[in-house]
Amino acid sequence: MITVITFNPSIDRMYKVNNINIGEVQRVVSKNATAGGKGLNVAKVCKILKENPLAMGFLGGFNGEFIKNELRKLDIQNKFTKIEQETRNCLNIIEDNKVSTEFLEKGPIVEKSDLERFENDIEEVLKNTKILVASGSYCENMPIDYYEKIGNICRANNIKFILDTSGEALKIALKSKPYLIKPNIDEIRHLLGINIESREEIILSGKKLIEMGAENVCISLGKDGMVYLNEYNVYDVKVPVVKCINTVGSGDSTVAGFSVGILRGYKIENLLKFANACGISNALNMETGFVDLGEIDKYQDLVEVKKLS
Image 1: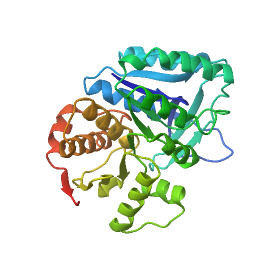
Image 2: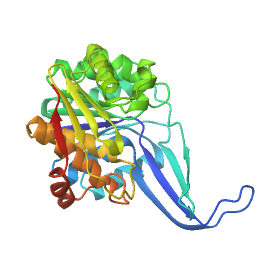
Image 3: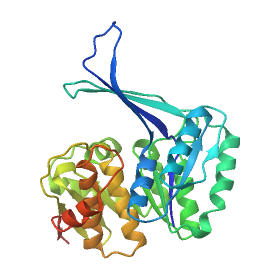
């Protein structure tokens, strides 16, 4: 089973307006509300890929109930830990000229007792978990080393830990030797405090992350593909040119592809093609955290994987 942790999910609310005039009443043309958060996107794509993921994390209040109900509609099982404070909202206002303005709430404050109950909840699912994905930011008041703690739990239970986060949380979590991390170039620059431009510099930065503890490193390069490496090998991945509709969630869809492919035992070249095809498919669709199985079949044959060492 794939277990997916989203500590700080949200209701993602989208308003479409003609244009924003500051200081004036704005008339909304259309609106939409969905269960959001990086980990929830991963879970949704895993479900489309015909796996049965388990979603976990923290939920509270009316917003938390809304998210649970949305997951039920998608037939995604969940074991969220209930908290007193309200789960956050994230608002995206899109104008006719496609300019997008986002307002992101910090999220609820999590107490020590909430963490203890979460740890009890996760203990109950470890036996059936083969892959554990943790994705996104912490809630307020969470220890900065909490992903490291999750990683150590995974290692003690022979669970492959896939981590998609950034900054100090990622740096500390590397001590737990996660099975796979997926930083982008900007996140690596910030993490290592270095400038990265060339493919060679990208590879060297990946090797540094392996020295810091990661078993496998997937460095996302957007339309330029990715570099994937571990202690033994380096792979350069090129993706086909496509006309993107919505790239939000493509990284999460790629993580879902990795999770499913690893669970199924795909060989590395096939794994890289499959994961990248998932990211491409998300970019071809308006809905975030959505992939089309036909598109995945098509584009994984067009992804080029070259073993460099």
